[in-house]
Length: 166
Image 1 (cartoon, rainbow, N blue to C red):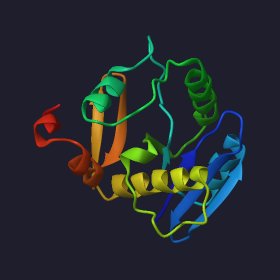
Image 2 (image 1 turned 30 degrees about the horizontal axis):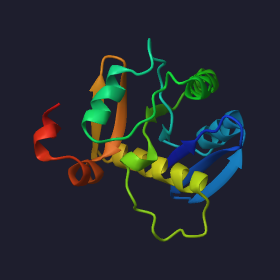
Image 3 (image 1 turned 90 degrees about the vertical axis):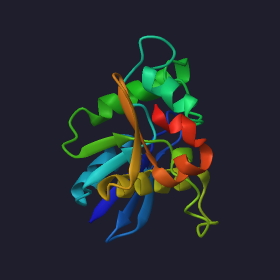
Image 4 (image 1 turned 60 degrees about the vertical axis):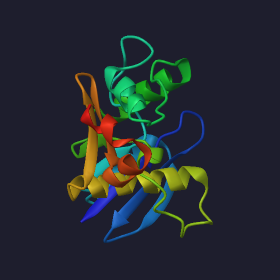
């Protein structure tokens, strides 16, 4: 099984992490990285970006995530909106399951990769979210306008139990 995590960037190169039967990170333009992930046979791609644009500054799913203690950025901010538009355009032809996540919703599983930069770490955390998703060891923050996949472990550590009922 192979999963992919992508940390897209608006200005810098985007970063891809492949995790499973092959482990590697690459930097490049988003479209090329998506083709690599699909071409290598990734079962699912987790991306550090909203997969829908909000009507205002935030989606309902972002508000729910914040109530759970997850510090997501509002996709309606100008810079974020441009990034989301770019991601949606790049994903338009992708035939692999793509899920939305954000690295701080996955956790610090990667204390063994001190030599990586933040973008590589974020891409690897996205790949871990994809892995957890396939293994059904994840939590979905859901609303009508989106789903954000995080790991159950992070949610249990960061959210008081009474808030898990959302």
